[in-house]
Length: 188
Image 1 (spheres, rainbow, N blue to C red):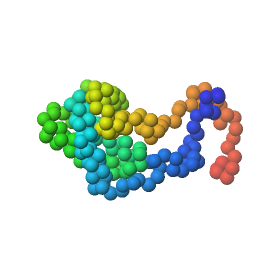
Image 2: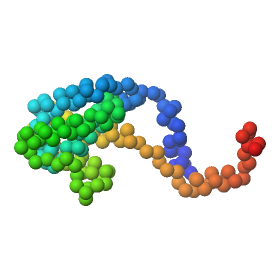
Image 3: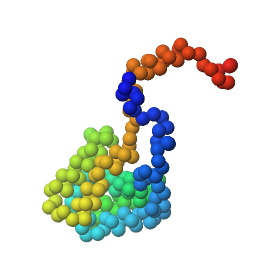
Image 4: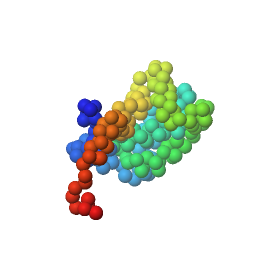
């Protein structure tokens, strides 16, 4: 019974102080073209590019890297989710072209055996972290990749409400059966 009282109640997020998180404020960039320029400028710096290419060479698919970059920008309030959906294919195509130009064999996505989205996400984060450890350069590029893999910012965005235990639901049903509805709408 006590656990049910500790859980978030429906609508609780609407009563919290607004603008607590970066994604609750207006984004810094609203134009998709500006958002693409933002991401490409971050990727093309020499320190970041070598780490991104190292991660691609290590086996991280380009669509996962693009998704992580866009999701990180949404979590940090750079642009909205809508803009992220628009620009992700452009960022991925840039990563593909850059890897091809560098002569690196790349994967665009995980194979059929890795189809579960949550497992693919965890595998990608694991691969990126391993590539950071394997790469001895601890520069702005390593910081960029570490920022992309921060699970705290993603977990805040993907909070789920805990489910009420079955006994609490049964107790609510029992109470509902004994009490008759009251008020204007109950008059029938």
